[in-house]
Length: 584
Image 1 (cartoon, helix red, strand yellow):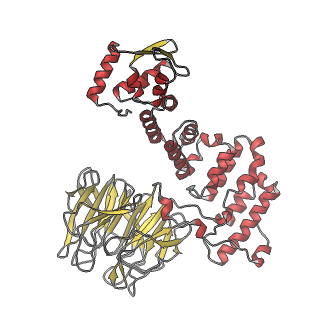
Image 2 (image 1 turned 90 degrees about the vertical axis):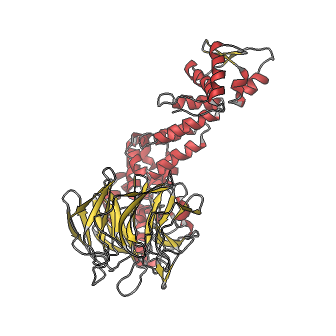
Image 3 (image 1 turned 30 degrees about the vertical axis):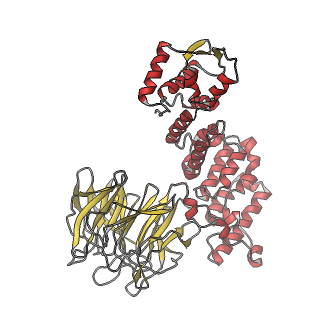
């Protein structure tokens, strides 16, 4: 990896040639008996350290400078950067180079080393990089490494580096609301940390157990995993914590509360925020966007709604932005695409599609947005196109085998699957997938039901097809496609039949939101737990809407701005009756 310095290539090559021929050289730097002939003004250009050294740290006629605490190869890299504007960074030299650049305050090399280390972050090295970054002036790297730990903590718990954390650092991490993890994983991480030095660390069990939000686990977990631990059983403080958590859990169940602002029951931040965008509400298209926090089970309006009301549009999350594609406002069928930058919180129009597309199906694959089928105001479409953000261009791709509007598509195993819809004459049970490598559509086994206004989502090696309209009824049924066997299997039905709803997966739960039940537009939300295979209700949206679209935003630094504020959760006040009940 290299970085660009202050000089142009042409001028840098001239200076470097003078250095190599030692012409006009006015100083010699000695590092461990190795001499480097340099020009003072060139080194002053990259760092105020050398300005201070040559102007105030020496006599005017001094030409020889001995620098300690550095190796000749590192000094060579610093001087090369001063003359060429670039530096070679590798896994072998990056940390030593960053320390040297920090010592001499060479910001260009510091930025390059930090960028290199950020790209190298993984569960096996993020803790060591974070600890290393605290020893040099690299606040951006320190933040990136720390956030990596928080966002990938479950994977980090399997690394050897977890055992190297101090008690203080470990506690600070476990205290964070933005630690993206389930509480049983927090508990298991504590046991792993203690097991590294049980004699010394075991006495810290009460301090560490207090970091587990026990009331957000289950009675089964506490009984089987927590109360069977000797460190817990032998600690009065630990047993008191467990008993208190049990009372809180009973109260949460009694009053259908998902969490409190108090630590024992305060939900951590979710890994992603579910957005419900646009649609029809009160017989009119809406521009409203609601955000759902899966951990606190709360919906709230975003301040930054769409600029124009849209229904039957598509929405995807890509590059820290939301793209709203096509749609219908009651009068016009859109080919326009609006982009909302989640960090800057600004809307802008990007390149329009080749076709107007209402009832459009959209998906993201390998950094590109696919817009498929739909209705242009005259005919149902079989055409498809692909948007590349880097060039801001839409490109037509191969057309589908069938005309489809009111279908739904998703991505699985580097293919775009589209299912169901309406072709202008009949409601479809057919499905097909697109392969970007061959630019071809391939028909797969048909679904068990005809489904227009369907919800389709790919997850855990299956394509899930949910709800819709078969020409007679709104459906509550669901099915899943196995690409390995090319067949569909029936799943448990939803609690509420619906078509033209939003669908997404958040934290191993398949959420469906809103839609039309066959009688009315609904704000009802439910989810299918991919682990248990059961449907359960979730908090309803603030408004009823159908023809909406959903997407999930995740993995960007400002995600906390879109989550429920934990301080706004209700405060825990235990009822006397619950407080006196026997515990586990």
